[in-house]
Length: 209
Image (spheres, rainbow, N blue to C red):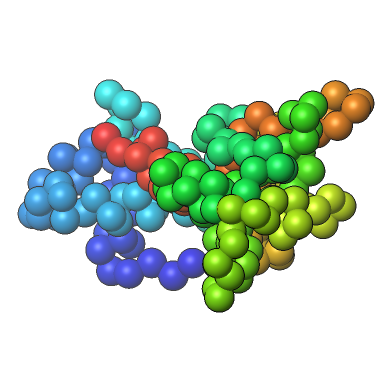
């Protein structure tokens, strides 16, 4: 990673005089604290610097990017998953569209009478079915849903990086978080691109002083 002039100056100040607070660094550079905040976040996430509350910034001694890589690897689905929106497989396409609208989600997870995962409904599935079709109340969602074994899912113990790779590989917006109890997959959560983005952005907040 190539640092710009101001980032290089900040790095040299911290390496020579750390631990040092963000305010002290800003004073040395004759800049506002807000001006150097993005640079400090980049230097910290890239592994050049480390930071601790009420202590300040200091030289980490790590290889560039090691710090952020370590933090990302430690992030688990269980810590960032959200509540799943689940529907039964016999409800109509019309009801599924209403549910998706009311819950403001892009994916519905479909379960059987035992509450085990049997399918996934996306906006595209519902849109494709609704175009030119006037009998949406008569079509059950199990007719149009994506079925097992073609469903991509994750475990709550998986890393967010692993979940993100699954979404990118499959070009989907969310994954059901499941628990396998031996009889089927129980849906216990969902992880979305929004969850993952928020989690990775929190890395910068964790180092903010």
